[in-house]
Length: 114
Length: 112
Image (tube, rainbow over all chains, first blue to last red; front, side):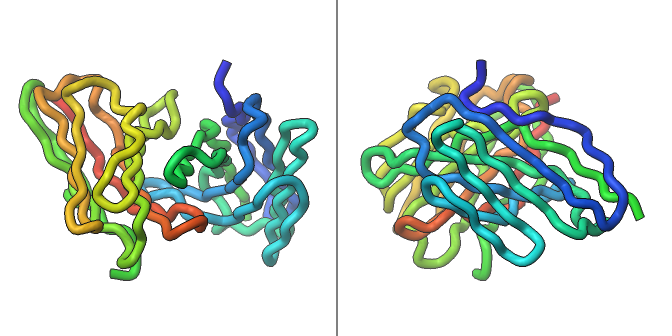
């Protein structure tokens, strides 16, 4: 079993829908939680960054972390065709020497249809 | 530069050849990471640099893989005697202090 589980989809929604993406994890040492967006043939682009449990909102994006359940979510409101991409969750603990190597989910492929 | 720069963007080589992949991090970022992204495996950590030192090399898959960083800036990942299973996208990321990592667009490596 992988340390981070993420449903790969694909997920297809109509424009304007609310999208819910999530990941579960097994390592209780994880403290830093991130969501990245990746377009085809591009590198991951940071969307949201959360430390420990709680919610964080940035425009149409909301990230939630529930450490007690080892569950993180990303919500996208008013989804747009330009949101069509692969969404990757990533997380880390704090290793020696400030090492924050990321452990990744496999990514969820999202298509937003006009 | 404004972002993390990687070169070459694409590399095709024959099995058994050596390859060098380059990463130019964001100016001033002291931490640098290499990851590998392959189909079905997702992104996997390879190595972490803090300045010119590599305190965590635990993700390097074999002794054919090595990396160095000079001047606290540019890093080179070298794969010797390449094998077909080395085909993947190699991604570099950099960060400053406790901030999250920012990625380049990667080098797409194909071994024939």
